[in-house]
Amino acid sequence: MDSETPFDRLTRQELAWELAEIFDELRVDQLNELIAMNVPLDALEFFASYADEFIGDGHVDARTRKRLPNLMLLGYLLRLLEERLPVEPEPFDA
Image (tube, rainbow, N blue to C red):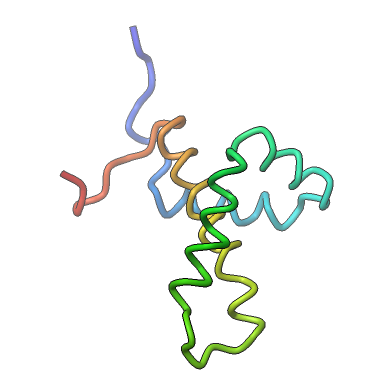
């Protein structure tokens, strides 16, 4: 029987903040290990390729262009966490 109460579960926003705090504390080698264990290489290649295609010839500074694949990676990892951990559904969820 599941003894978990609704108050024990994280909302998606709380989960995102927790992930951001954890990432802030990780050393580079720990972050690389986390990525290697959870993200297929083809997904990493897709993020880089898609970011280049998405930005295209737009007037986006180099710093932003470089960070877009990392933002996509963070979103991917957050989605993995949402699937693995119990989170409280938000109103926009079906």
